[in-house]
Image 1 (cartoon, helix red, strand yellow):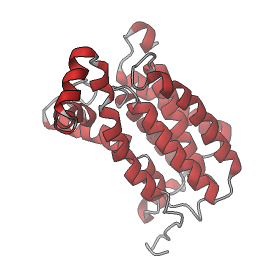
Image 2: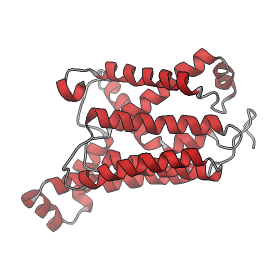
Image 3: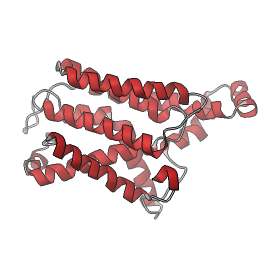
Image 4: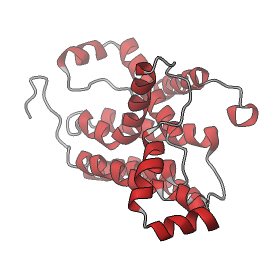
Length: 250
């Protein structure tokens, strides 16, 4: 509806994705029952609290993917990195159902990516960004719920850390400036990379060519920097295959 009318606010979209999280729990029975934080884990033993927390987390990740969907290849490339990391974790547990899910969703995302990067021939829109963000978040929930003894929640958080950090960064900045957290602006982390880092890293001649001949290439030059920012913690997350006990020790 937002893609068609441009009149659906961010709060309504966030509530819709959270409702999707509740529906997914009702259909599958999966939720975030633990975070390896003693007091929080005690609260998450109560189903209503666990479901609400899961819905909030799923809605947050889906909204974060939509938030970074501002440059060619940025959101889809980030999704491919995160899906690959989750698939690798699932493979370590011989969870071939989740591996197949990451491959199928990743293949569909790759098909879009090839049309979106670098020339931006098609775009995700809110429908695509929220849907893929939700699928990424729910695979993460399923992976944590299906292997509570062997996969640390820290691994899941690291894999999805880049889009989450973008959202937290934007909320903190807006609150500090006295603006509503749902008010759009052009000071996202990826926007700052585009305006301040890309001109310093990309050779002047190439940058001038991009601006004069084809400005869309300057847009696309932002994504590789953010892919690296996403890939480093995602790679670290793949190594966290052991859950911590409530006392904080393996």
